[in-house]
Image (tube, rainbow, N blue to C red; front, top):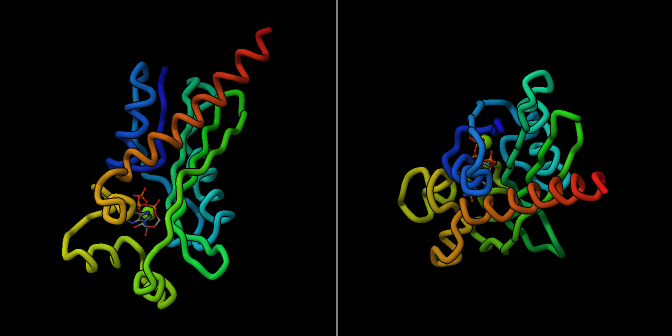
Length: 171
Ligand SMILES: O=P(O)(O)OP(=O)(O)OP(=O)(O)OC[C@H]1O[C@@H](n2cnc3c(O)ncnc32)[C@H](O)[C@@H]1O
Ligand SMILES: [Mg+2]
């Protein structure tokens, strides 16, 4: 089995490798066709779907997976949100979102000013490339849940739904 992931970010690739340890995983640099910093569940989910659609290869029977990070408001509180999409060679679409946590007010202010979360969090902890390492979720959970852990859960939700529907349709 071959799985193409619409990103080269190691947190995303490693999550897919963990869940599809029986497959050959390829990272592909594609556009999410949404804002660099998605600001709603709708936009973040669409970014994941757009990435997955550019990765699926019907003729070569390659599965496409898209993973997208963003932020969203819930009752005036900004939350970190993450979405995933899996598209099968039969063109079936599965989607799932990950756990979400509130972001501190000063992070929210930077985002409202138009900065990207990746840059804000690097500045916040005086480190580089947090988005490719533990991620914002890792920082604010004291490393208990890393960005790769979060995406692993999302990819499990995708694979699980796909396997369940294959099982049901085979009955
Ligand atoms: O190379 P790609 O796949 O684009 O990986 P990315 O790190 O840019 O991740 P996304 O495009 O999915 O995320 C959209 C934006 O949100 C930021 N972001 C989302 N989740 C984050 C996290 O946990 N830690 C740091 N930045 C995050 C990220 O830096 C982008 O500015
Ligand atoms: Mg990006």
